[in-house]
Image (cartoon, rainbow, N blue to C red):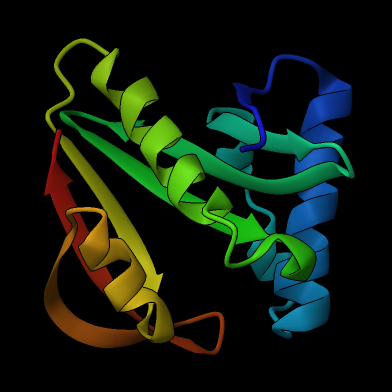
Length: 142
């Protein structure tokens, strides 16, 4: 399994943005203006790197007692390898280390609901459109 680390250098952050650009903007058609936002500056970013180089990323936004996991992406060549699950588990581990944080939340693309349910997340609320893609909110106790 590829190691996942918390991003600590500007170069790593740019690598995370490049991965997100490839998956969200190029592959899924998300407008660049919606993919990058001001919250990137305060988020904790995770980067998954394998023998072939950077393969995936995610970010965590801390909001009171919640950790909002987002911008989760894995390059097509690494999908189905367990890397996405490893990213989510790593994000939850980071969140557990933050004092007072008791819940992990995320906005899941509808096609990924089952993936997150297998990791202990529960869907709630209505379906909504984010960046032109149907999503549903999910949460998990930490």
